Image (tube, one colour):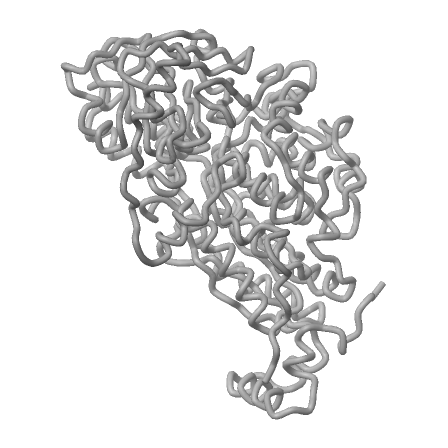
Length: 576
């Protein structure tokens, strides 16, 4: 049932009044070939499109935009496309994470500055999902998310390939001398065969699924492969629904709650999703005025098993996940633990949306009593090396490394690591703990996906394929290994990680949730007193703003001035 009249819409102030400015708005719209009947009395629906030629994951978006428009026209809305920063994960340097907050700011200001009544958010590649949602949450007008969808399975010499995960696997084999240049070229040809995001359970697939668990995606939409005709139909359904949401005045603030975020966390755990999701979920929650702590991830991890047998933790890919029943089926297997009364964008509760959803392939979405991993899809560690926390994905590591003590091999930054990691003279063994410093939000800058430090070549030749690795960086969701990530506070601001020296013993105990630097308190204090801050990476531009205002990983790496509660809310623009 409608809650709003046309006169109450934001766009009415631009189009529906008898003023000189409104005359200009109408005449300039007509300049583009639209008649007054096209827009008069209709909600204006923004389509925030993160397509670009530098984002292969979104290469199908030009066609999907037309299908979203089709639904908006059919429902009586007026669609307008607003290009937004694309953030193609493979191409943007030094890291897309440097620009997630930029996209969030752009999304919010695009919506505020234009006559937009509701918005379709088109994303999928890693940072586009959280960036778009962060901006929409802060703007708080009706918003629905349209996920790009995963690409098809890769293929090479009869083997199924998963993007990212198999890149790391076969690159290690090539560095070890076990893979020819010809075979490597064939892998390059076969690993990415269609439009869409990584089809492993990387950050893209994780965040698209979590957007549905939060309530922002039409039921089942987050797992449809990009080339599937159902994906095109989802686009039109999304366009039709956003028009209805505007009349109903269904906003992000009506959907989001602590329960909705716990649903998203439990979905991430059951998926063994990307560790990057932790940073993004915290940022989204803080935009919604919910102070979500790292503790929630660890608390829920102890009771939620890994059910999705998807690479890099498992065996299958997102295409298989979709055929097995997809997101609705996974959530239905979790229903005893979910907050089923949480509202969603289609106007129904999450519980109603997943009711009756079946799993068709138990090998892909496991039964509760036959999980991939009994608990602990993610683990939060603390100790004198990570006073504010660090994270690890236990299921992606070799089990014998989950409790380990070894001597540190320290790299001062990424360039140092790259220069020395394959040096035959490097003093390193399979028991060593590789430590990368200066890779956090301020240090790198932007907290890049450097956390899966490469295994030294001389150890690869000995058959070593996993080691304990520590950093204040992130790791690609498609990666694997005993990698401790997001160590907080980061080394660039004097966190304990900056104080580690070669040969120091480090203890990792995932079961006890402990990460310790095994030196005395007095020695630690002495090193802290002697530490000096390195010079800043940027002195001007966006980079300088980023370094000044970005928060640490345990707070979501958002800008302090963008979080809900920082200053008075931004008013609607005056029209003069």
